[in-house]
Amino acid sequence: MFAESLKTIALQVFILYLIAGIGFVTDKTGIFRQSDGKRLIDLLFNVILPIAIIHTFMTMEYTEQHVKGIFVAFACAFATHIFGTLVSLLTFRKRSLKERGIYHYGIVLSNAAFLALPLAKSVIGNEGIFYCSIYVAVFNIIAFTIGIYEISGHEAKIDLKKLIFNPGSISVIIGLPLFFLQPQIPYFINYPMEIVGNCNSPLAMIVFGTFLANSNFKNLILKKELYFVSFMRLIFIPGCMLALFRLCGVKGDLLTAMIISSSAPTATNTAMYAAKYDNDASLGSEIAAQSSILSVLTMPVIVAIASVI
Image (cartoon, rainbow, N blue to C red; front, side, top):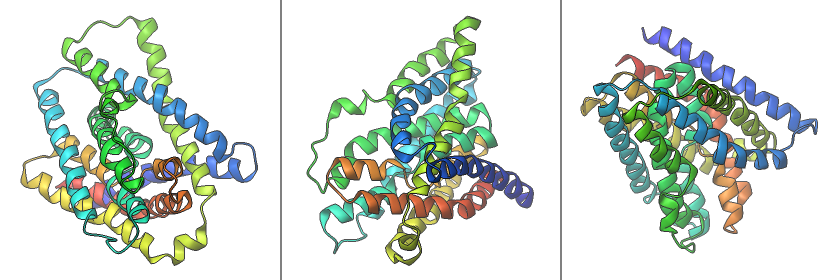
């Protein structure tokens, strides 16, 4: 059972990284560069991803299990981020506030939107997007508060409006009433949303590939700090949360979706936020790149364990 799950999940991860390879090659050949990818991220994050989330909510069957799953997913997502934040505060304490902040951001915040959602859809289907969307909403809350506070070296002011007025949160706020009310959506609205939403996975992975193409691979191999961050992000935190969730009775597709989200590599926006707040963007890029490469090995194992216990 475990071997079969491992094989299935490893194949899905491999397929996603093959798509990322398109971005890697097109960046190296000058067809589609990282600078182009950064612009596409705005389209993905502000338009395509919200449409995919809203469409999933409005087409998901209303059941008691799904209703309960929403509340459990919120609890799991907050628990993962709170645990990660507390653990991160014990690390890199001798480094400067700004350098420490990048490492902390890399430990706590995963690439839930651009890698976990595509993988969850591949492994679980629409239920994967349904539950991972909750995780993404919580991710945005943490990213716009604790995240920017840390990565700015405790200089950025927290904008409370962004807790709600961000694409991830708004899409869940719109999607939840549609899930509970179960309205009949006309075909001419439903089908275009489905098509646009399906663009999220391939486009996100192609953009992801352009970031890998611009990584300093020498630093990825030699910097011991990066290995520690990758260990925390890819193994320690998801491993602890897997044990906690099972002790609390979480299982099935919900457990798998939460572990996919919590075991994803460091968020690709680590470098972008570092640049925005006058921090070391190259270090942020290196953290995201190394954890992304290593996640090819770690995610299949951890997710396969979650799917069989």
